[in-house]
Image (spheres, rainbow, N blue to C red):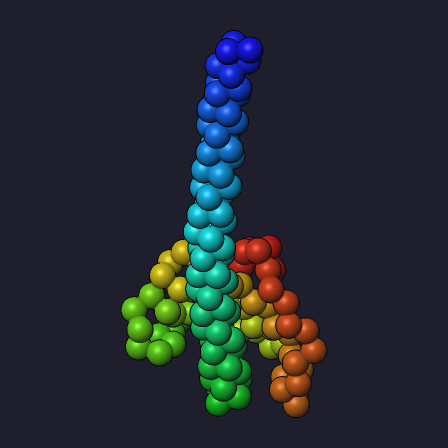
Length: 134
């Protein structure tokens, strides 16, 4: 009977080690989940800023086209005075605008807008993976 008591202590020790390892893995996994979740929220926020910059560029391009129907784009616009939060009016033709908004040169939003130059109504608003594919 003494022999069974020695084995039961060994089994209890192994059980405690296994439970400790499982708990450590769960805690590590939860830590990484929180870290990656925070990273995704930050990426989403910065993408939203680039999208807002692109929308500001569309408004600027429309205004410049209204004031000068010969306006063709090809200029960089400082959106809010913050470095890295800018946009580029790539091209403005009679009925189409292509812009790229960017934040920190890492997060980009490319927009292609189709509009009626007579009454300035927007008929299509599309986000593209790149300006060349618009």
